[in-house]
Length: 108
Image (cartoon, rainbow, N blue to C red; front, side, top):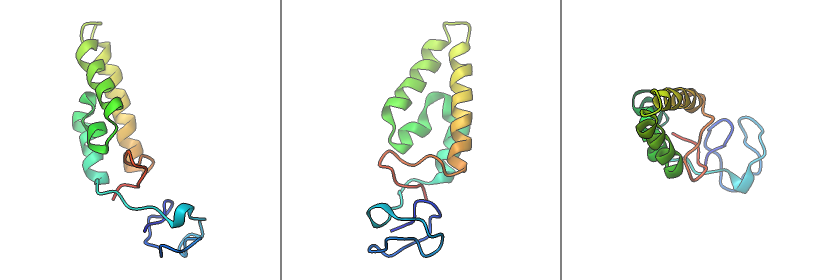
């Protein structure tokens, strides 16, 4: 298991992380099989289509971003602009480690 705060591996039965001292919920969390770098790059390059959200398991957010881009073209191009800003902010949050996968596990 891994500490949610610092990402260090901890014993399953540990109550506190020996590295950072954070109290562990459920004895730590599993680390995601999803890559932080891959999801961040997807957000930067294909983020307006919501590909990074589909990759992380957030299907609803992915569909919303995709529709915002595709349908938003009809409204003076504002949809892709808004979706692009949204994706850029999410890319920053992914690289900062603030976004987990849809199961709540930290990205590897």
